[in-house]
Image 1 (cartoon, rainbow, N blue to C red):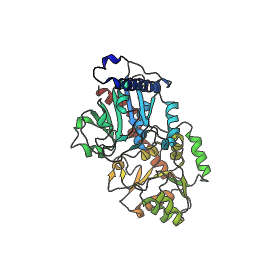
Image 2: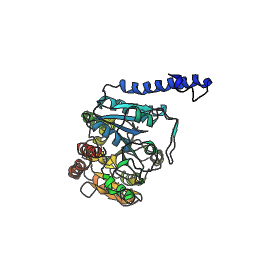
Image 3: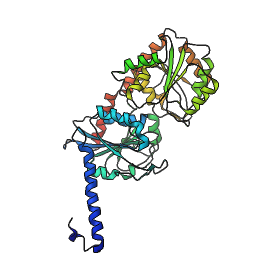
Image 4: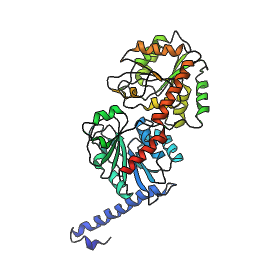
Length: 412
């Protein structure tokens, strides 16, 4: 370091400290570069550099999986794709998801540490290392992609390059660097239409990648493990450990008729504590609980092991990944209306689903009964075909990726 260039601006006794800090800056830049050098794939200089960010990017939640599928399927001959995600000790359960990403995807990983994230506006990430703006500068990022509720929170407030933002819950903002709001349903679009110009909005349902090639053996093993017979009608739902959005409509419906139909089973992955408590207190039979899994093969094995997705959620859906995943493997749907979000009703109809009215567990139970009496599964097979046809049209990832890349090109 040439101290003569700065010694006229600061006292001499501060020169050692300035030199020390300068060395740390160089070390930090080298540290950032090394994250890329360790990866198998080398960035192509002529390609556009795209950074996909989410603090919980390695989760199997539908917001995060949407970003993951974008990272996976973007054309790597055109784009260098970087993923930036939180890497704190309590997130180690996500590492099998990271292994899946690194095994199959040509992406560059950039983990970051932090002490905490504010749940309320403006969503500050405390003690973030490395910082987002440094990553953007160091790797010459051309386009930033993220997802969230919609508020002008971090990271949107700190990014000064073109942004594509996946708006999940319809909170509007007009940050000038956002080139496109990708709304995950028409319902979300209507929420922001009064604030965001229509030319900056695209509606794109969350895509799904489809079952893994090895999932067939896994779902057969799963049914055997649970002692399910071929004649059993297995209902299911992938949930998350969250009492806030838990809706008891399905368990009350199932409880009402399970004693009359021994052939019906209910398989649920990652049940909410309230559900576990209710099942244990009421001693409801034929309910089978599975631990959560971040492994893609487990998710698809689950969907293929069930006959009908019995969907429930207190605040409804602004899109509904769990529904779309189940439809892509031919499953018909039972669901219900919500006082909050009803975007799932945009693509569910009488051909592929039954929809109960708000809190009407008796009506929900009548739909379970219809399937319970379908012993030869003729109705299920008819609805399978309709569900798959809808899913292929709306959720098939090649169609989604093609449209998304067209949007990317409009940003430059």
